[in-house]
Each structure stands twice: as C-alpha cells, then as structure tokens.
Image (cartoon, rainbow over the protein chains, first blue to last red):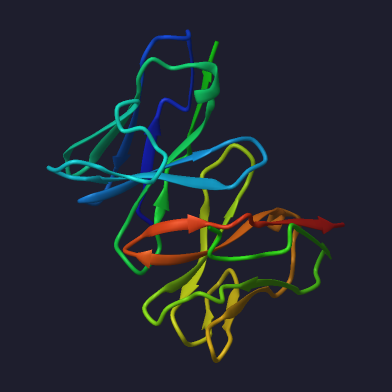
Length: 114
Length: 109
C-alpha cells in the first residue's frame, strides 16, 4: 500500500529553538495532509489540515504562529514547532490519502524539548 | 467534543473472537466509520472502514447498526499481535479524523 514517511523519527531540542518535521507521501500525490499530536497515554488530536499551495487550516486552540505548516509540493508537508518549550514535547503524526478510504499515517516523530 | 465513545479497555483470550463496540450517536448520513489500531510509539494502522453496509476484509469485520449510531469491530481470532489500542473514528470530511479515546485490547495467551 501507499506509504507516508516522517522525518526525523525522534528529535531532542533545546528550549527556545525551532524544530522542523517532514511528512512525505512516497508513492502518491497528496493535495491534503493532516497533522496530529499525541501526548502519552492519550489519543491523537488533530492539529491542522495542510493544503498544497495554500494556507493550512488550524483546529481551534492550535496556535498557527507556533506550529508553522508548509505544503509546498504534492508530496511534502512540513511542520515547524517554533520557539519550542517543554510542554511542546509530544508525538507528532501526519497522515494523507484519498478521501473515504484508507488513510496512511506516518510512523510519527517523538519531540523532546529540554 | 468526542464524536465516538468506546470502552477504555477489553481483554480477550488468544484464538477467540473479539467484539469491540463503538457508539457514534451524532453521526450524519455522509460520515464514514473508520477503525485504526496503534501500537506504542507507532502511527495508526488501518483496519477497516464502512459507510452503511457491513464490511469484511482480511483483518476484521465491521458490523454497522441499521441506524448507524453504533458499530462493532470484530476480530475473528485474536492473536497476540492484535494487542493494541483500537480507535473508532468518524470521517466527517475527507480523511479528517477526530479520534476518540480508543480501546486498549489485551490478548491473553
């Protein structure tokens, strides 16, 4: 089946720095990708919808200036956590796929801010 | 606002069938019902999805109530590799998923 790949799988950064996470669709074109965040022992929470060639749509309560999303091509969306703080430490997951059928999730990125 | 409700945890003996229930009373006519499962520190894995009719695939079966306000994921013979958190999800708009709390399935050897 189709594959969505995230990079890096894990990252540790210092408080106040920015971190970029990449999400690639390896064998299909994705005009829309989705970003989720998952805290330990909790469910996935949709953060934003990434739209190729246009602005991302953020869920209520998600700071768009803190979580910058760029979807510059049909196979790549990036999430940049700006001025990261320890409370931003989480598991970030992206997904893509045709509508109303199987969605493909990346393997996730574990972010630890120290 | 959780759109699906599931039991927090369930147990099953290995080789026995497992029925994982899900309530989605606010479902609308165009919402698809998806099931995914997740292992620790991994992205969710697709299990099955449907709209109105019951569905079968190599992994599982999905039984959807006639009024669509509930559904049940059926694993016909649980194996140890089926131990995971199972999420019942409504696809409100194209592939935009709002996850519920999920059911943690323990399979007992």
